[in-house]
Length: 184
Image (tube, rainbow, N blue to C red; front, side):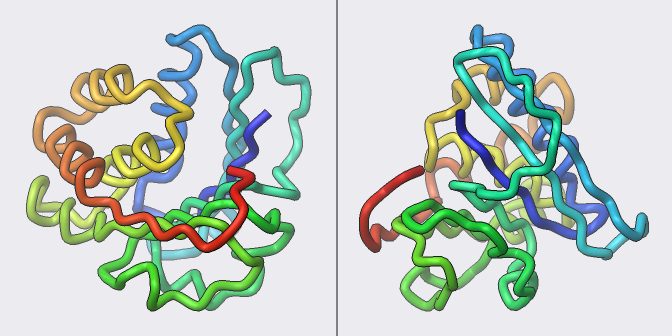
């Protein structure tokens, strides 16, 4: 079972993005679930959620305590210690940032660091500062855990062609740095 934790800010669309992944995995015959955690429910407040993907039925209904993948939609959350709580050594970190992966000093010893400027892509493609669909493209390229063609179809049906273009751009522009042994 793959365990993922999403970190973002209210209004960045982590819930909608995670639901698209869940639907894509299920449509492809797998199992997935997403458990959001909102805390203070206002735009800009830190939010996070827990995603599980499996080839077998998922019975857990708890938070993800040992994520092998962190998807971080807001670079400012890299400095929040809770962002990396329980992160598995050798996992993968996917960050929405304009910086190069080599520039990021991250705790938890990730084996791979992937970066894409989803905010810039979203602004250019959709004219909105909502990086979720671009991050979906990067997620698919970095992990392969959700079928890319199904994800694109779901983005198009839910959000339209501009968001599909943002996802495609992020898919092709994500940069991955390998730092060691890979668990995720």
